[in-house]
Image (cartoon, rainbow, N blue to C red; front, side, top):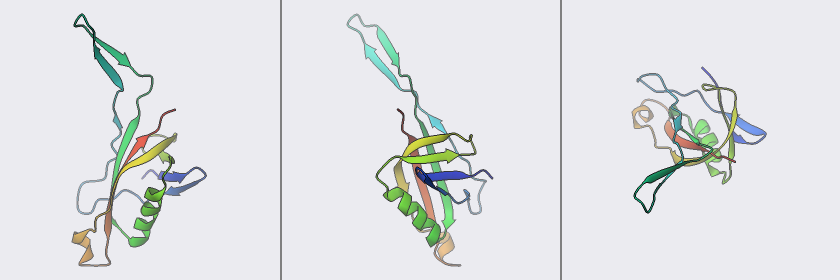
Length: 129
């Protein structure tokens, strides 16, 4: 499995391997949304302005994390700044991102049989210059 790093510049953390309990193998979708401005002219024609950069989004999720693994994610989510991100599933390029969505419910399926486990899902959005 490829590694994923996230954190402040110079102190990036190796994130746990993506895992799904009892389901298909984890995937890492990479979303691109073109930045296009659409404008209607006075004569009724439509014009499009294509922006130079198109930021990416990475929706990531993990299942059955321990409390210690969850603590790392809570720390990362607590930073109110851009974070350094490397997704080796894609390539070795470092990106500047922000965490725009973050959830960490208790994994009820796992908590009865063993220590309490947590699921984490977050969305990282690329910050462009």
